[in-house]
Image (tube, helix red, strand yellow):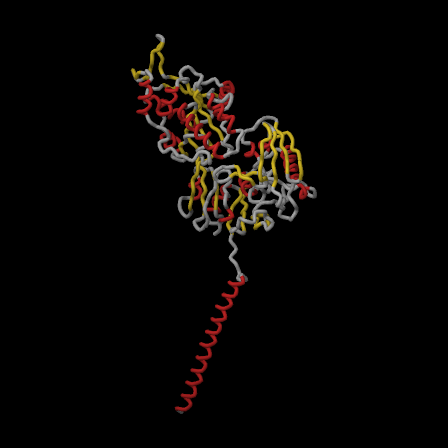
Length: 526
């Protein structure tokens, strides 16, 4: 009996030894296989992707779309001659260089190693084709070529553009996407469902009713830039509200928006965000030919007496930024930030006193040539713009506390536009959508809004439109900024906020701006 027990125990022991040995061998084989796969690069790689969204997608033809969401997405597929960097600098893409031959003629050299995603060559005929289509059809990019009258194809990789007038910083208008002529030779250009080939980082791989898949363009010309992001899923929604809800539910990873009430739709937790200055810029124009406003000390006193933070807080509930110069949205030509935004009522009082003004009965006044004059003027605003009327009332109250009288005149849109045209105002509150183009002609050029003249400024304006030297431009703009703040022909007030909200799991540096929310997207992944 005992021998049988020992026999069974021995057999079990042997079985256990065999099982343990088998497990050890298998584990060693698995580890060895993993090491071999890692060394040979045959292991299955994780596909890096992110999800974005489009509301009300009309077409993926970038020249036909009227949708800002689509316009942003198509920048990943189609490339321009010149692009705008995260700090709003013109950078070469399909064009390698450009030169101004005379006031209205530009010669542009094209990149020679570019292929469309289908393998066809990119040449100057594609630029001509795109130009023709922009001239034939109304497009969001049509204004880029408003002053271009003709394109001449010098050779396959050189074009000349002829303008009907001088356009400062014309290279910034070369940011329209280029389409393939050879592709559309066999396709209906006006068919909104046609998916064209592009030269960009990504290409359209799949189109379904509710989503579009973009994958890396293996024919992309820039071999030095690694595309860490391999796939982009573009979810398509019927409305912006659905898009916001999809983000809230975690179905898309990033949203770029000017909507100051975005938190009302997506809440305040569960995501990261980045706020940057937008392109909506409001400012006061001071007519320097006006008898009272021709005095520099009066203009500076007005600027010192306006607390822009008060306006942003009370009128915009801190959903806007204070502004000190039109290019302070992040342009490479203006990097400084003014914490005080110029508010200094004590300095205003001192400045007026030093220039012979006296504070009496709640007013600043002065007697010259037996004539007494108070600092009192009119401010024109659009009656139809309730927010601007509220801003004007805020400014009127602030200036009144400083002894400066402001009368608000609410004009109809027609009256307002006529006043702008004729420059018939003391002061006027203006709003504009800024361009990435750093041209300051509206503020300092001939016939500018403030009727401001200066020989030095004229010389600077002539120089900046005729140079591409970065140091010269920086020096000239530094001086323009000083003049803007010292002579005060204008008072920048505030700029809207552009918000990027994104999934907390998104990896990569967000360098988005209001021109292109996908700057650097090739380095993102989740």
